[in-house]
Amino acid sequence: MTFKNILFEITEGVARLTLNRPDKLNSFTGEMHAELRDALDRIQEDKSVRVLVLTGAGRAFCAGQDLADPDMARTPSGGMPDIGNVVEKNYKPLVLRLQNLRVPTIAAVNGIAAGAGASVALACDLVVASKSASFLQAFSKIGLVPDTGGTWFLPQRVGMARAMGLALLADKLPAEKAAEWGLIWAAYDDAEFAAKVDAMAGQLASMPTKALVRTRQAMHAAAGHTLEQQLSFEGGFMRELGWSPDYAEGVAAFMEKRAPKFTGE
Image (tube, rainbow, N blue to C red):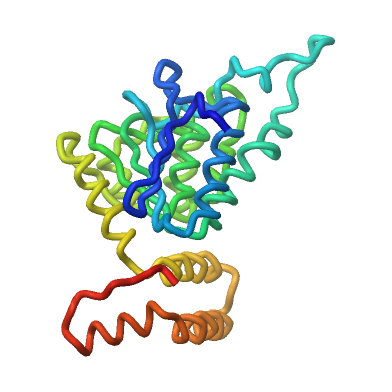
């Protein structure tokens, strides 16, 4: 596929996926979703990839759904579009793919992340933002509910009171406050943001990939388990990883007092 709406490159184990409609604040279209699916398929198949960085071109991360996209057009008879179908067709698969990708994911939020754009960022394992960035759930202003997992991510990250405030009042949440509230991992000065993201991506790319992904899976499973169930769930992953090449390498490197050379297996 030739990409028109995203930029995609793989360098030294780091896949960089940039939403690239800067004149439209990188808002989503059906065509962009198709390109994202193709890029994520490539990451899933390419074993050289050890981490994904998702970001936006220009002054925004993503402003959510492009309301001028053909998917949002009225029907030939003048009826309103089936927005629920757009969610099922595009946003649900995107969030689930990010949550189940075979490598850890970083959302590098370089500007406004609004609506579905904010939720897509939160679907990544680590979310970092420039201090000039902000997060916005604007759905209540147009008579909708937060989608793309927004009603799932927000209460888990910041608690019900703050989640309700963000969703009902539709106020912008500056990146620094988002970090203080625990919505994201960190907010960095704009001048050092790119370097911080590069350093984090490089660090994750050199780590035991399978162990990082199993950690994600264990964290996600915890809410649906009792403590006893979670202890057994962890034990299963420990058994699997205890037989992995990366664990053997990690132990050997520790005993030999050297830096490990993980392969991601």
